[in-house]
Image 1 (spheres, rainbow, N blue to C red):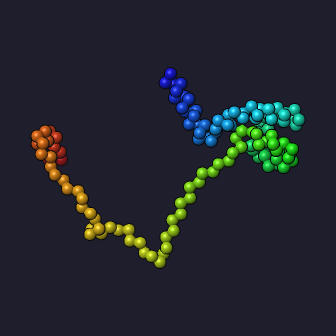
Image 2 (tube, helix red, strand yellow; image 1 turned 90 degrees about the vertical axis):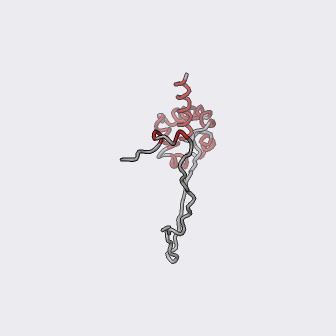
Image 3 (tube, one colour; image 1 turned 135 degrees about the vertical axis):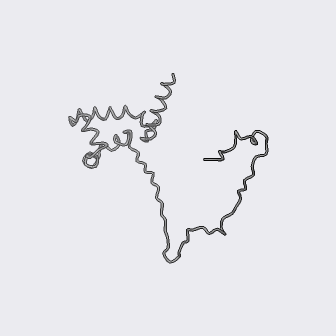
Length: 131
């Protein structure tokens, strides 16, 4: 049972990382129907069909066959998402930045006080005296 749960969670994580949603899974039958249409009308095998709708021939196919545009919108995996993180650091050269910390800028808010409880007075919980 544990292996089954791990397998399901792994598949879910993989599907989310590939941006596959429930809508795409539901529309897989549309993909196979359109593939059958291409096989009957154009004689395309499945790899050529994938190339025409998701690969190198996509632009050419969409320009030549405008009448299939509504069918193409129903196919799964058509959404395109981009998540980009752009970080820009602008440093003006006219303003010098001093990254060093002087000793007067340091705030001393640490004060060590040896433990006063009895278990710590014996040598067993103390650090070694001689290295």
